[in-house]
Image (tube, rainbow, N blue to C red):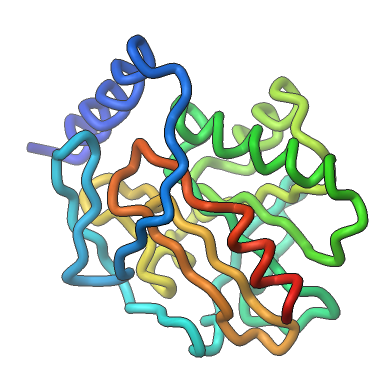
Length: 203
């Protein structure tokens, strides 16, 4: 089965799940990243690709694009802890919920000294359009891995057959050390943002 067919089936599976389950569940479950790992979409398995990333590793360098097509280097040190909320595609209901919950949490906690990023393989144009129409707060910066899938490959978040990113939260310290990773085993579940923030606040 070719990549386009797999992608169509994957998106259809997520959308069809919405009819009976408008609210997708948060999970505390987590699985590994990189080649040899599997993520499921309503029990359909997909292989992950790329390097395996672990807590304690240096965040690998990958160039993502913001809405102005400026580079964001994930390995750069920062004066703030960073949270990367990683999602397959903003065109799916689960990602829509993940993005809205991130936005609502950030708006409800304006004094957090944390930079929040939403990362997907959508183009910067698509991300900017989604952010505008979905009314996502400007405190959340969208970053695109559409051009070369460099982020997916370097962090092991790439879904091999789909060219999309697997649903994950990564917390990165000011020194660019990885502090926390949650990669959900099932794509129709939402990672635990509150736990990630708790870890980020202690850094």
